[in-house]
Figure 1 (tube, rainbow, N blue to C red):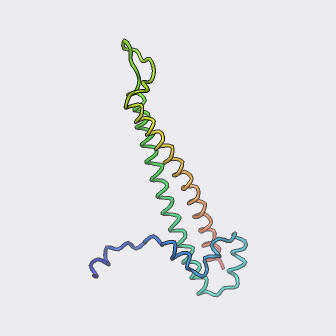
Figure 2: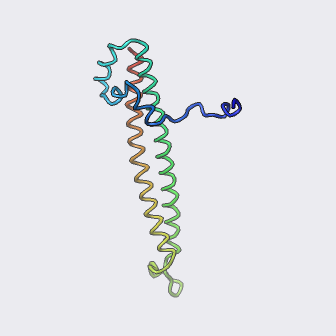
Length: 148
């Protein structure tokens, strides 16, 4: 069993229940000014627990950011391949391009790739913005905790 403990990740992703079961979870949703007012009455042990919670939330937001970047990369790859399929679906007559061949398989692949790219890019960008916002708020609260 100890052999497998060696290979475990040190920075495991906290589960939602681990974060929400904390008695200090309500503090993570406060604005920075309210947060600073609330923590001023806590002792060092409670501040340490709050700091651990903020670091867990920050780690979760970091993993969400990495996930969002993966979706953005996948969307970019699909978009590039879709642009290549535009040229494959062009219709030729007497060695001149007339337009798109709407009945070809390449055209349908191009449409599907554009749809997948749009979905991946949209989802990735929205998730990235939300994760960066959460990380920014957590970092401000961690700094406020370290100053007090």
